[in-house]
Every structure is written in C-alpha cells, then in structure tokens.
Length: 292
Image 1 (cartoon, rainbow, N blue to C red):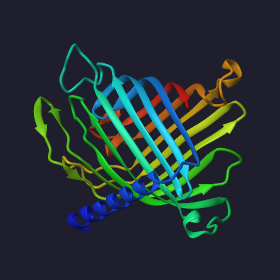
Image 2: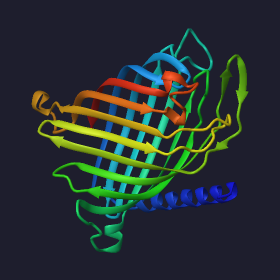
Image 3: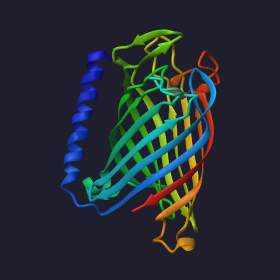
Image 4: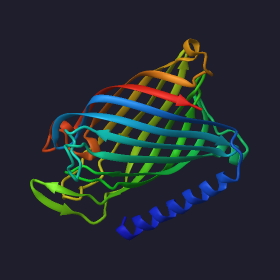
C-alpha cells in the first residue's frame, strides 16, 4: 500500500470515528462508569535507559454504553523521577507525559437486529479509535498519533466483561531530543500499518476485581532512524479490592489493589539490541481508583 493510500485510509477512518462520536452524542447513555485513578511503581523502564524509573500516574477514565454501542476514554498523566529526565532540565525534574486513548465499539448485534453470537461469543462489534501522546523526556520527546479499527468479540462471562479485538494500527511519530549529545528533530514519520490482537477484561470475584489488558502487536517496519522494529507484548493486570464493606461506600466506588505491567520490545525497540534492558518492563505497582 502506498503512503498516499495509507493516509487516505487513515483519513477515512478518522471520518468514520467522528461520525460515530457525533452519533453517540445524541444518544442517552444506558450505563456509565467514570473514575479517577492513581498508580505508583518504582521499576518502570524506557528503551535505551538501563535505570529503573519511579513513576506516579494519575488517570481519568470513562466508559459508557448506549443503544448501539459503547465508548471508552482513558487519559494518563505520567510523572517520572530524575532517572527519566525532562527535555528541559530543571533541578533534575523527571519527564512528564500525557497519553490519551479513545475507543468506540459499534454493536453489530444491535444495528442488525439479530444475534451474531456463537459458542462462547455473546456479541460482535466494530471498534474504531485513536491514541495520542506527548512527552517531555530529553532523549525522544514522543508525539505519537495512532488510528485503530477492527472487529471485537464480546465473550460470555458470569459477570463483568471480557472483550477480544483484532485491530489494524496506523501509527506515526515526530520525535525530537538529544541523541548522544546531538540535537535532532524528525518530521512526522508513518510506520508500516500493522495488526494488534488485544484483550481487555474486568471480572468481579466476591469483593475483588480482576482487571487487565493484553496486547500482542506485530512489527511496524523500520522506525524513523531506519532501524527494524520488533513485535511487542504488553500485559497490564491488577487485582483490586472493593472497599465498600470497610468504608460503607457504594459498591465498587473505592478500590485499592496491586498491579503488574510487562512490556517486551517496548515501542517496537529490540530488547536484545541497542535499546537494552529498558526495552523490557517488569513493573509491580500500587493502585487506587475512585468510581462515580
């Protein structure tokens, strides 16, 4: 596929997403869950950086459903310590990053008026969305933009949800920073389109919630420095305790727990190559969520 065709398709997907968003804005939500979260860990990692990094992560999350589908928004504000230094150094401050995700899933069962489920699959959807980020680290200063689209299968579970998606990704970046003492600034670079198999779940068990995301991402061709990329494995799981029995709050309103993040070949960097140990994350963390 030519670059022009890729960008044309990406623009078409963006138009589809805008149409879905406008369509849902006119619909009343059948259900919704909004939360503020906090996460802390001491062994986050970044490619080409061998040091363990402490990060505080503040999260705004929202999920809601209407007659013909659902929306999901998550915005993370990540604050690193001095082992991941800022692009503009000030008293050894760490980098700051904002990472935002939006997904809309169109319920094809509701649109078609008939059940498309089979076996363990209770429903079929079409998911479209985007990721965007900005980061102020000295080495890379990421400005990621990514469009996604593909089918989603909703699996039957006793409670909660378990969704599996096969998504096509169109990703680009326009980094700038300091590479070995040399300043650089790259124009926006488009990686090869590539697929991702993604699973997301939230399953309650008594007073606990088992939550997680697992992404298996194919290589995306060469990066903006002409180095080959590698397939990525990203797993983020958490076990959260519902504090309602202790605090007398509404069910699931306040949750505390522990999490674990594993990320091999982070951002497509080869963990066995120059990116080194920083291209693999093994990060236990503490978590808090307030749902309203």
